[in-house]
Length: 120
Image (tube, rainbow, N blue to C red; front, side, top):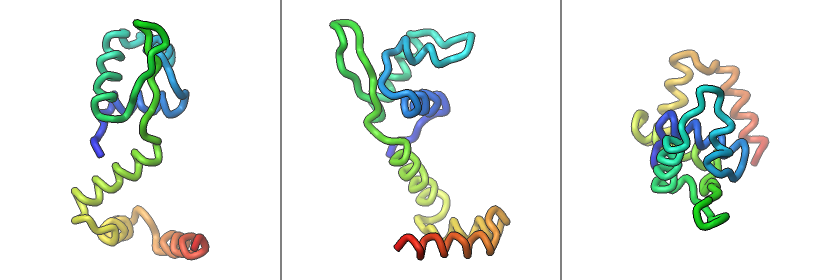
C-alpha cells in the first residue's frame, strides 16, 4: 500500500469522516485561512493517482470525490508497512519492543491475550 503525506492523510480523514465531497465542500471543512481550491484539487488528484480516491461527474466541470479505501484498510496496510520496514516482518518483534520499552505492561499483554482467545 502506498503511504500518505501528512496533508494527504489530513484530506483522507476529512473524506472518511464526511463522505463524498466536491472540492469546495472539502475546503469548507478547513479553518481560516482555508487552503486554496487549486491546492486541494492538486492533492485530491494525487490521492486519485495513488488509488485512495476516485470521482464521478456531477456536471461537465464538477466532480464529487469518494474514497476507494476504508480507514481500517489503510491502518492495516500502514501497520504492515511499519512491521515490514522496522521489525523484520515479525509481529513478535513489535510486541517485544512494546513490552521492553514499557509501552505495554505484561498485565495489559495478558489482557490482550484473553481478548484474542475470547474472540475465537
